[in-house]
Length: 128
Image: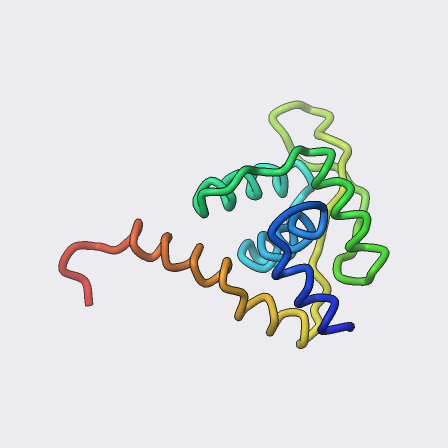
């Protein structure tokens, strides 16, 4: 794992590198694996929460493929359950369980900021 390359992705503020960093953030925040359509939706929520513009589904797909080639994520074709009898053929995107990768993403300022926003949103009055 190239930690400097990873830090570059996480610090990118635009372009496909930012999308790649956001994909890693979303996978980290949401238990490590999401179906591609769910990942697109979670990136919309992540970026809306942080006041940014969400990437297009094409940009997310491109970022996922690049991350897979670099060894940051794995891709597994499958059928996602839906309300239809057939389900949806798509790809399960999973973050690689690498200690350096998980450590860097856990300390990422955007991850920390996102968690703080959610802590404030779900804080219960009078709770300690």
